[in-house]
Amino acid sequence: MSMRTRLPGVAIALATTLVLTACGSGGTAPAAGPGGGDGVFPVKIEHKYGSTEITKRPQRVVTLGLSDHETALALDVKPVGVVDWFKERPFGKFPWQAEKWAGTEPTIVGERDDINMEKVASLRPDLVIAQYSGITKEQYETLTKLNIPVVAQSGKHPDYATPWEEMARTIGKALGKDKELEAKIADLKAQFAKARAEHPEWAKQTALVADNFQPGIFAAFAAHDPKLAFLLDLGFQTPDRLRQAPKEQNIIEVGSEGLPELFEVDRLVWLTSDATSEPKVKADPVYQRLKVAKEKRDLFVSYYEPPIGAAISFNTVLSMPFALKNLVPILAKQ
Image (tube, rainbow, N blue to C red; front, side, top):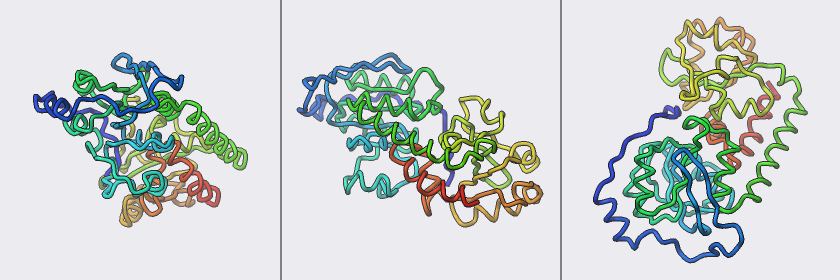
């Protein structure tokens, strides 16, 4: 299964039935809660399509970003609606998510950036969060016309290229949990600093994260993609071509002939979807001639078993501890 992030959003028309669904379900008024009396709300958040004011603590949150629900879960907020990235059925099968959902099943409102707006509205959310997301202005306006506050993605970065700390802080602010979020970021940064201190040699090594989405095509993730960003946080360097990749694309693809120029790095981490992925890559004659392959500095880790690839794909305050615990020892041993 391809794990590429499809960057273009999809255009979804505002249907009359959508309005009727929202109105018929009792409007979008939030359930009673702590409200603004706790001194946190209202908060105002700037984003790609303007700004959104959240007047009281949200009670029914829908997340439209691929990984947004994980940050909410880390802050002990269970969204009532989410999008599915990894075709999870049942939802929340990854261990770092499962213990937070604790048996609660959210409504799946879409797959990746293919979102069912009618389904979103039917959940009567009092907050929609879309950070690791490519929602369109039309989709944003569809919800705001129903008086649903939407915290869209940052306007300072292209879609899907906002650093994880910035997305996390936006979600923490929207949920009124800035302090809890800052504590989690500080803890994570301390874990990364510990790994860097224990492995100073990584700062002198180049690294690359790759996937073989289709036969004969080799994809290297850009520096702004969460997968490579995780290795950079561990101290590794990466080729300039990946640092300078256009922010609108998260991968650079090459054919077999392009492997020597881009993939000849010190540490090469492949993400695999199944048992056939590794032998397919290793069967390529050009790949076999790369020094990184001949000297066994390449590494194959799974998206699923164990889900290290999934953990660095989400790359959130919830999933990164799992990745640190499981990937760092493998990198250190190699």
